[in-house]
Length: 118
Image (cartoon, rainbow, N blue to C red; front, side, top):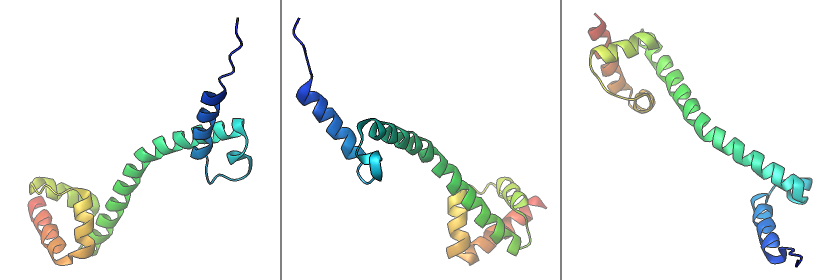
């Protein structure tokens, strides 16, 4: 049998991994086994955090809406309940932006939500 070493393909494969580890410190960009571990761990974190980013933004929007609603005398949960009863379909991102950039419109929405709750 002929001995196969995979010379060029193996080197090309390693080069791709080392490029993915660019910017890592120490052996994390220099040593083959450590590079593989670091890059795979990085991919795992990237996958997880693409989902966590959505959760964190929603959390931030809720905090902003709650603060703005409480300044106008209503809690977040009562405000959202009023919006549903008034059938106002705005998502939390839009409400958060409105609370920051357009307080007059947010005041009108809060008043509508208060009126819908009774």
